[in-house]
Length: 429
Ligand code: CA
Image 1 (cartoon, rainbow, N blue to C red):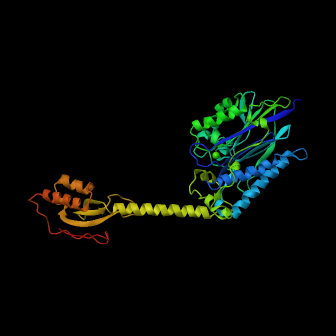
Image 2 (cartoon, protein in one colour; image 1 turned 120 degrees about the vertical axis):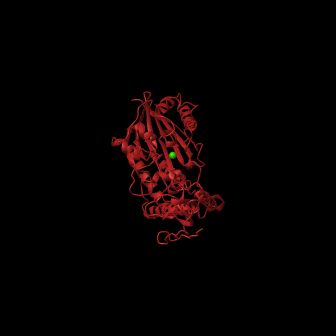
Image 3 (cartoon, rainbow, N blue to C red; image 1 turned 60 degrees about the vertical axis):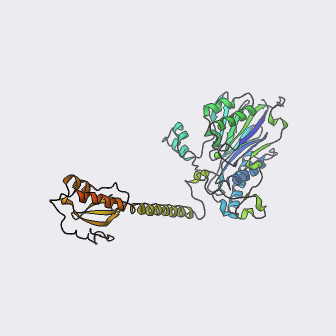
């Protein structure tokens, strides 16, 4: 039986829209892994780097250990560490990371998977996704409610159902995968899989070398828009007896660490920054679209705080909009009728159940019945094309002028009832 060796390459790019890289990638002759951090710019890179730097410690002599057990322990240790970081610095609550790891023991891979980063296999020229996304849309696909093609463009395709958050309720899938000579394995963040179709990935992954494949995959993600950090880690099973290709980046045998895990700690707000150079402190970004990926879940502690704050903010926003809208209506005027008289209303001529949006501003002393019928109809319908009280008075003056001489105005009009219009200020002409 052919003895197999793993060639490898790891490549990442921050993308065209983001200022930080929250992906981490790792590749060596034993381990290929990727972590896509999220939870805001202040914490996504911390989650991904922390996880990667713990998980990559299984890249060691595996002769006396069960690789799957070792990988499982490393994933659990990383999760525990994330929990500690959140307890130490509540400002990073909600940070998390995906994880995709394949540990080669010389015969087969021990695998760990959580989140929506993907593992693909290219075997005999055909691409297969060997990981199953832990996403909301994937659950709909599983239930037969969505096709994979619909899932691909679904507006909520990024919502994760499972991700490493430093809590006990989110376990990674652990398992084994057998590899064959010539197999190429691609681990990638959604910055690739969201931007590049599987059929294109299949073609690019089949490039002459894995280094070329990695470069082309990243390039295509950027050309497609580069909306997110894009990271690819590729492993290829080759005949161990063959001389390493000196043109490959892995020919030096050194592990490759890319992305957030390779950039060292960044300063951040909160207690975690204590002891760090204040000048390196990066203020937390208040609104990051990645945070929306947590929408379906609630944080473990004070889980009611965020929903309540959200509801309060939403209600507050509605109130502000309502007040502004009401203030706007109260700067409007129109000419209408009240108790058979022509009057000027302040407000707008709209019926909203339960709301009073207009009241009589001025009486005019003109009886509707004294007007020519065409004018009377207009007044009954409400003359709304006036921009101010002055224009409304001009309109009333025109109406008065239209009253036929033979039908002089009756006695001054009655004041509109204060019961119906509490704020009416009648100024009879
Ligand atoms: Ca991502």
